[in-house]
Image (cartoon, rainbow, N blue to C red):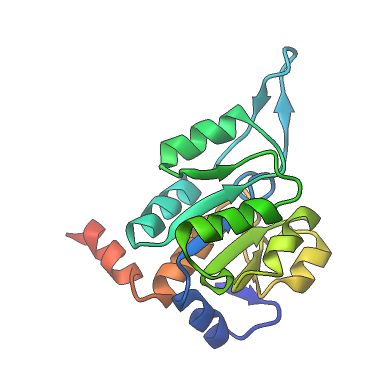
Length: 182
């Protein structure tokens, strides 16, 4: 299911049990990192439907989801609105201030948060959270500092992989699954 980088599966599950927040990067995590522009300068991004469904399911179990991105994009704002994510911070190349604001707003500790990243801009948050996650195709320096590395690359279901793992660790996955089996 997962590639362990620095931490055993038991320790990962223990960290995931404590989570109340999952923070996502966008480019390279929720997308494959490619940027498409038309001749008028409009930007297009591709999001994986399973990632979106995983986010919705995770939020239903009580884990909040936030987005902190170094870039600004209307397509990101639209997708996050569609998913019901209100904690959206775009245009934050230095992501620390947004991270601190989210933690304070939710009244949680950094150890109760996880972050999924893929590039160096994500390291200031990844080094502060309780569970640092790199997507499979992340930069080598990000992978080296992650507790866990997904088996799937960014934009291809990596976020869903993390959402499922958190729900399993918190004992909520069967409840979510059974709702579809009735």
